[in-house]
Length: 302
Image (cartoon, rainbow, N blue to C red):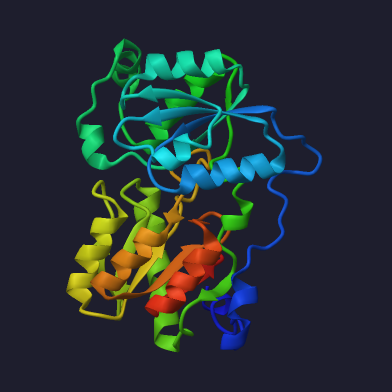
């Protein structure tokens, strides 16, 4: 793991602009035409909007949006051709909207705030689904939704579809160069995150000097960063990765502008992410932000 970090650089300061540009990567296999229409289940943040932009570039003509009250950004809604507003838990309406859209493919993008999950008001369809689940986590819950979509002829695609331009690449991505001690901590952090993600506890850990400062649980990455940063008192490292058998259709690790802002406020100076399985939302802007904040962003091949 250390070899993936050492000797990687974007070059001199003068080359920052060219390095931060989005690489030219086809968003879908050239042998497969894009779907004519797409049913997008959109949570909060900029992720759904970026996915719509990527889908349009790939040739998707119609975007049918399932938007959630108090979650989905109005800027995302403005990019869609049709919109169905829902409350969290209205599975019956979600499936009806998917079927009515005529789309045969769907994608889940964006998150739902944990506090809104506790304010869940499930309809009959959702109650039946929940009653069947012995364990209730992202994999089981979204996996059941994927099965329900499949029953009405709608296939759930990977959440990274049309987002290849925003996937983490190997080596130094942005910010100051790494020191040898930091590389050791990153390797240590990945060994811990691999286990916590495997056990469905969380995707993120904060470490420093060989010590685990915080482990993400249901509260989410932002609170994990805050807690770990307070204990580390500067120079802490955030490690984020997917679970070993991650279903890439949902709950894919994401780093965005808010992540870096929270890291800066908490004293986390390095963000290490898994190559090819972590989304760096709006990557060029994120790299510029990391440079400005003095936060190192690095991709590690797990």
